[in-house]
Length: 146
Image 1: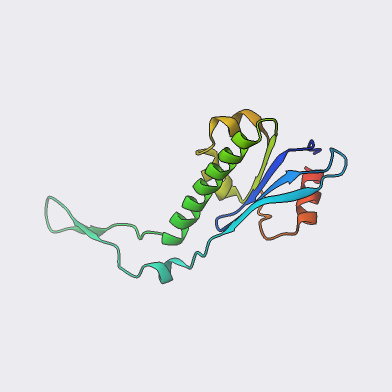
Image 2 (image 1 turned 90 degrees about the vertical axis):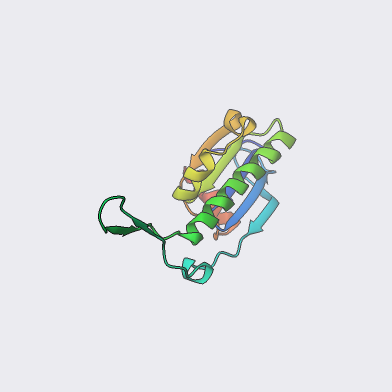
């Protein structure tokens, strides 16, 4: 895929985001970093150790338990929402720019539900790959291959 000069490219997973702007042209993308963030997100066992609650049946003496809360996943989902909000703010600040989002599949799904109007209107492509820990050259190569 060729991306125009000025296109915003967000690369994210549940714990890291990179926001770039293409300073090159359609033939040779040159990604300049506008923003980056990382979230420390330990495993669920490190975040909460309480056992799930129990519920009692209205009739008889049967009991059942609630599902355990996945604190790690909740934290990743919150980070994805933050990434979508940051993308919307940046899109509003760069009204001429197209937008490409590259994110891990679950992160991309969470972000989609929180895109703002500016993001939705100028979205050029979404790529469901986890490239947040890859080099800028790898990201440019993934864009070219898409």
